[in-house]
Image (tube, rainbow, N blue to C red; front, side):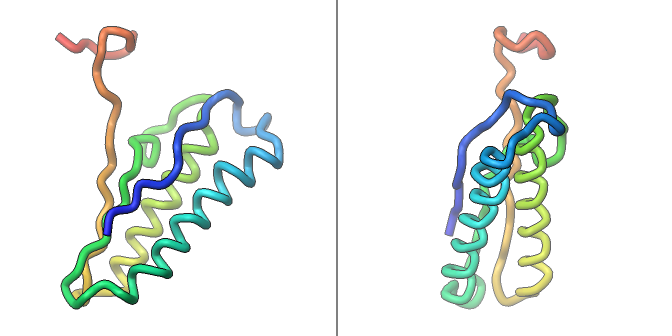
Length: 111
C-alpha cells in the first residue's frame, strides 16, 4: 500500500499561522494518513508493505512552510512508530523526496 496524501502549503512564519490553516494542513492531513494506516495496516498480508511518500521538509526546515515541516516530520515519526509496532510482521517505510535541482532554484546548481 502506498500513501501520498496532501499537497503543499507555504506563506507564513510559524507564529503567524491561523487556526484554519493549522486544522487543514497539520491536523487534517495527519488524520488522513492515520485513517489510511488504521484501514490498511491490519489488512496487509504477513510480510506486506506500506509506504508513505513524504517531502524533504520532513527533515529539512523550509522557512515559511512551518505547517508542512511539522506535518511531514510527524508523518515520518508515525512511520517509525508503526514499523516498531508491527515488528517483522509487515514492512512499513517512507520515501522522503527532495527538491528537484533546476535553474529556477537559486540555491542549487543543476549543472
